[in-house]
Image (cartoon, rainbow, N blue to C red; front, side, top):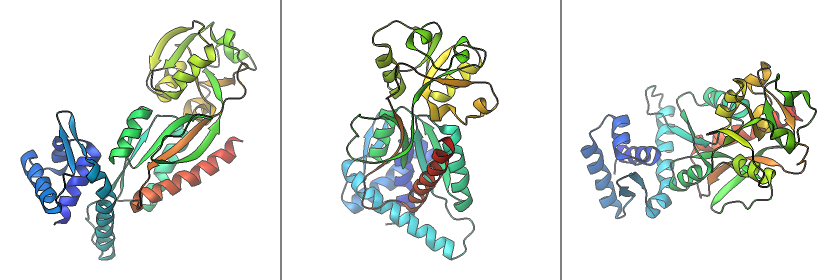
Length: 304
């Protein structure tokens, strides 16, 4: 067994494709595939499930993945202790639904990079179901998702509450809704609404808020960041957690603002940090997890 074989398995798991892993590793796909198969024969298990849509970790592979990552982390520590300057860097992958990306995620990545200058952080925008699947299969180390207070927590994950907020209406400062202290559903229905697409927590929340009433859903989009940009361009209003708007550069510049919702003062939206339950966690992923917790405490205190 060679360290490169473990590196290759980790790359295929992270990228979900033998082809993409071969491109990143600068290998031919047949050479990569043969190397992985040699490791599988040596271990006596099929580490990957190979499909037309890509390659994912098998059930046996998911059980072995934490041990593979631990070996790679140990090799990195050995290289670091030996003073090797050109060692292979680890990568931590974070899936996010884009809520609180600017106020929370960017400072976290900046802090983490200071302590781990050779560790790459890859941030991938995805829907919650995609994040959960990638966490289960080992494609993501951490996931940022929105969660409506009272909903059941998914099994198989360690969930940590980072931020707690209320749904608010995000508008331009020159919108008629910005002149109000708080917005009712009737007020919201007078404006074009920029909705999140099906699969997002805020999509489900808005439909529950309207209770079947018709709204001018002029647009739908993936994620809060695009929704805020569309609001800034005067295309309508959107409904987001307050922590996704407050502190955003567009809000600090006075390009967007927000108002509470009169008809719902009880709903809480939680920003959750999730990771797969495992006996061991890669050191870099554990450190990034801790940075998230520290920054969330600081941001939560600043938002109160």
